[in-house]
Each structure stands twice: as C-alpha cells, then as structure tokens.
Image 1 (cartoon, chains in turn cyan, yellow):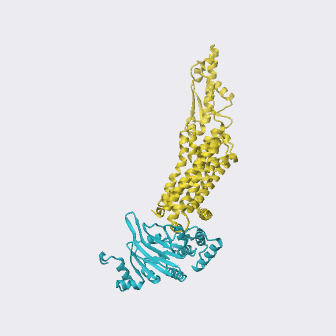
Image 2 (cartoon, each protein chain N blue to C red):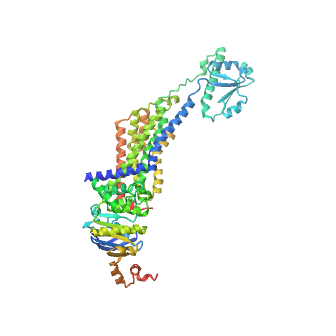
Image 3 (cartoon, chains in turn green, red):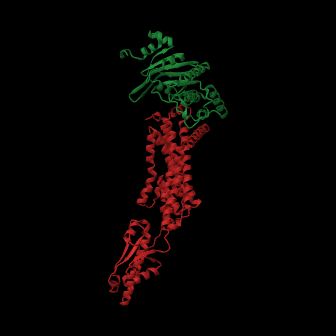
Length: 244
Length: 393
C-alpha cells in the first residue's frame, strides 16, 4: 500500500511535480498515465525515496519514506525506466547480486532465483552474460531483479517500453499475477492502451499535476469523450491551448 | 547492525571484483603497466651497460705515425693498439665506422725537434654518445704524453717540473655506487607509483561513472542498502586492484633488476626480497589515497569520457615530484614524508639507496595517507547521498 500526499519537486526553477496525491492499495494495479515529461518518473522516484520531495509525504505500508527510506525500500521492488544491467555478469548473477544486497540468505536467494527463472521463462538465458541481450531479455532480468525479495509493493516505470508483443503480454500476465497475490502495483506509462488494458485505477498526470483519476470508464464518462484516447487528450491538453 | 553492514560491503566488493576480473580493460590497466615497464627499464639499463663495457684494448688509428715514433711508442706502451688509419679518416669518423682518428702533422718531426708546439689532430664526432669513452681515453693518453715530454724538457734545462703544477686537484666522490644506482632507479620508483594509480583507476571509473552510464546506478540506489556500504565496497575493490598492481610492480622491479648487469655501469645494487618488501610497504599507503580520489573524481564527472579525461590528468600528480626532482634535485625534507605521492618518491629513494626507514618515516606516510583517504571517502559518501549522483551529462 502506497500513499502519496501533496508531493512537490522542483529542479532549479522548473517545477516537475506539484500537488500530486494518490492512494495505491494492495491487490490493485494503479496506473500513472501521462505524456512524456509529465512528471511520472520523478513521482516514481519519490515513491521509493530516490528523490526527496520538496514537500509532501510518501508512506509505504505506513512507513514514511523520507524519514526511513531503507526500511521502506525493503517493502518495495523497483523497475526503473532504464533497465541498467551489468553486461559482464550473467542473468542469474545480476539477479543474485540484488538478492544478496537485500540480505537474503544463500538458500533463500537460490530458491527465489530459480523460482523467478521459471516464472519469467529465463532458462535459455540464465547463465549467459547480459551484454548481448535483446530488450525483452533485459526486461526479464530487470523484473526478476526487482521481484527477488518478494516485495509487497512494486513500482514499474514504463515496463513495456520497447517490448515486442510477446514480451508485452508476458509482462501483463506477470503484473496481473502480482495483483492476484495481493500486491500493490504502481504502473506508469504514456501508452493509454497499456494502462487501460491493465490498470484498475488510473491517475492521469500532466504538467506535474494530477488532472483526473478513476477507472477507464469513469474517465471517459467524466470528459464526455467517445474513447479513452479522446478523454486522455481532453484531460492532458489545457482548454486554452488551442486545437491540435 | 554492523554485521549486516559488513555483509553488504563484502557483497558489493565481491561483485565489483568479479566484474573487474572479467573486464579486459580493467585488467590490462592494472597488470600490463607494472609487468611491462620494469622489464623495459631493465632492457634500457642492459643496453647502456653493454655500451659502457669497453673493449680491453683501445684501438687508435693513427695517420702519419712515421712522423712521431716517440708518441706512437708511448701510446703502445700505455696499452693502446695503434692501427692503420682508414682511407678517408674524416668520412670514417663522420659515418661512425671508427670512433676517432689521430692525425699527425707532416711538420711534426721538425717542430718537435725545435721545441715548438707540434700539431696532432684528434678527429671525433661528439654527437655520438657511444664513442665518447674511447675519445676521452685517447685524449687522456695524448695529454699524458705531452706532460711527460714537458717535464723531460724542464729537467733537461734544470727546472723543477713541479713548478708547473701549482694545484694538486683530487676529486673525491662521496656517492657510493649504491647511491648512484638509486638516482638511476628513481625512474623505477616513478613507475611503481604509476602502478599504484593505474591499478585502481579503471575499476574506480567503471564502478562509478561506468555504473551511471550503464544506468545500473539508479536501481542500485533504490535498494535498502546504506550508501556508505556501497561506497565502502567499491572502494575496497579498487584498493585490491591497486594493491595487486603495486605488488606486481615491486616484484617485477626486483626480478628485472637482478637480471640486469648493473655492475657493468659501475653501479652495485642489491635488490633483495627485503628491499622489495620495504618498497612495497612504502608504496602501499598510496593505494587507498589513489582509489578514493579516483572514485570521487569519477563519481563527480557527468560521463565516463569526462571521468577518463579527469583521471588521466590526475595521473600526472604522482609523476610531478619525480619529474621535478630529476630536473632540479632537492634534498628530501621531513615534511615531504607527509605528502602522499611525494612521500613515496622520497622514501623509495631512501630504500633503494640502502638508507633504511625510520619509524617516523613509516608513521608519517601511513598516518597522512589514512587521513587523506578518510576525508575523501566522507566526501564521496556525501556525494552518494546527493541526488546529483544520478545526473548524467
């Protein structure tokens, strides 16, 4: 369960995020939907304390991230927008490194790693150095890395970016599985179809602010648009910006 | 708590070492230089030594020997081998076929009999270093003959020949052969110092600027791991690579120098295992300083390329004292032992000269190095706490 309250973050004179609040409960997939540069990644980074909000508060399972980031992070698995693997380590070594850094015992780490190799169907690539991996293979390793400590809360920043259809489906299936397991999933994307297909609750972010939230149907109903795409455009483009 | 921290540090350390040993560039930077450079220097010394090993007999081509039988007799009795001159003396000297040619003037006999200066030309090419010794030897022989003749003439005229020598100049060189060798070996010291820097450089760069460039830094920092443990693990890995480089460099220096005929250079150096250990002990404290500074510089750079640029510049820092001392030798002062880099230059010189190290020397170099390392590491940990660490160029 993640609670973000009135988050604000600026870089120099540029306000990246302002008045962002939402609630992401367990057993639900919460989507952060917004165009590029809307402040999604900055918000995601504040959720696990990688960036410190200028004001506002984030609580993960009741733990304040700004005051006790290390405890909060034990309960979070993060898939950042960049996958960043170690190219000279094998897939399993990459995942194992994170298991060790999470403080898992050797037997526990081995069990989790082989579980994830099964779950993500990584048998063919498990012992290969990651340097030559395709985007889909890299995604699998990064997901396994993010999930290795069985976190209650999972942050996925644009997880389907650059994936082919098969890989995208695999990711969707995994995310739904996590919801069935009662986890709290926060999923950010700029692709409406992605969010509409997956998320139970959508938070639309534009210009660093939350402009609307609800289910896909609610958003469509509220804007009186014909489709979610029209609803999205209506929400994201300020009325005085002129027609596109 | 402390246990958990140490376990995290060792996890980071093991990963960075595994990564480093699989990285050909890191290994090359850590190992190639300390392995190759002393061997290269040994080759250079051997070449110089062989040049200095003179043939037992000095060959003197003399043109017009028939005009000066007395001189030729003197040269022969002094141990020189007077031989036929080449056809074209000037050309032969210029082309380096012979080191020198002595040309006796046709008027030599007449002028000598009259007691007037008789002309002898000593032809040589002063730009050829290899022939310098032979020319100097020939010069000394000619001067010896001249002063012998002068004395005989004075005695014949009833004058005490010692009147011609108002000064009795004796050169006393206090440099022992070992000290002279040590000057020569300053170059080796500089290489060992470089090895300390190069050993950790690539790993330090790859585990910070490289980690950011590969974008693996962000997920790493998102883990419930204290930043101090990440810094400590990366530091430890860089230090181990540096120690490896220094150990290798000192070993190669001792082995290579023991296979170099330094005694032919008139230099007697005993580079025993003990000297090697003392050298290692002097260089060791430089390793953590280098590793910490490199990590800080590379973490502060916005890209791998920028880190590379800055770090190759920092390579000049340890070389500077050595270069300055070669051009303008300064007597080592006590305070120099407290400046990492400079201390290594001064103390290694001491070790190689066979002077031995005092407790004060050791205390100063280790104390100052630990202090500098600690300060830099605190700064580095703070940088890792800052959001700026994620910023890429």
